[in-house]
Image 1 (cartoon, helix red, strand yellow):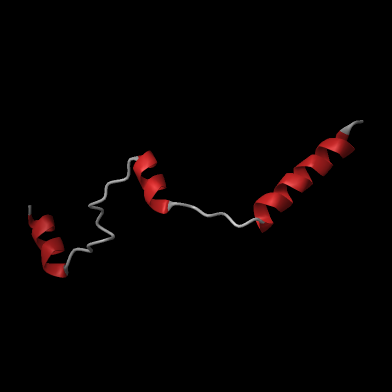
Image 2 (cartoon, helix red, strand yellow):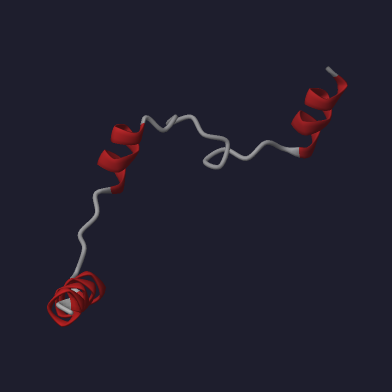
Length: 56
């Protein structure tokens, strides 16, 4: 008993999350999470760099 109201609230919140426009500031999020700005994805290493790393 009493599940109807809780489920309706959850459905309402889920719809709001799904259909609202989320303006996410990814730079600020990176700063808050402490992500390294010199990440390898931004500068992928070349094959020669990978080989030199394996040799060490």
